[in-house]
Length: 156
Image (tube, rainbow, N blue to C red; front, side, top):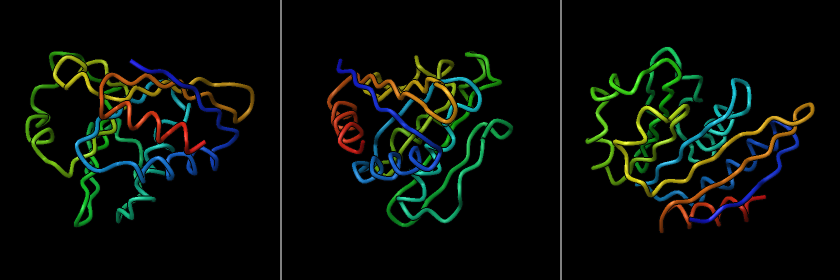
């Protein structure tokens, strides 16, 4: 397990960090995004999607639980489980996502699915600071997520 911290000074800076981070994504990665409402989780997802040249711009998936954005090389699954209980997650198609070599899973409010997804994942906790400042606290849990943590720290 490795840890790190990144400081974001604004929404635009979070988009920039996420965009640079997206260059390290190859498919098969899982990223958990935690933090209070308004902390920048969906902004981070938007930055990743823009950098990957995905056609649509992500919005909060709170009411649809999962949205898929794709191009011919990548499939981004944006999952938002804010309103779900642990026993309600089994019909979302995780098996198919995990078998998809092009899939990148970015999950907000991920605790209900933590037990059904592999432990090798990058966890990003968005901590609110004064004004638009945020601290992104990073924890990696395996080889793939270690590589992502290093890429994210270099993106600072």
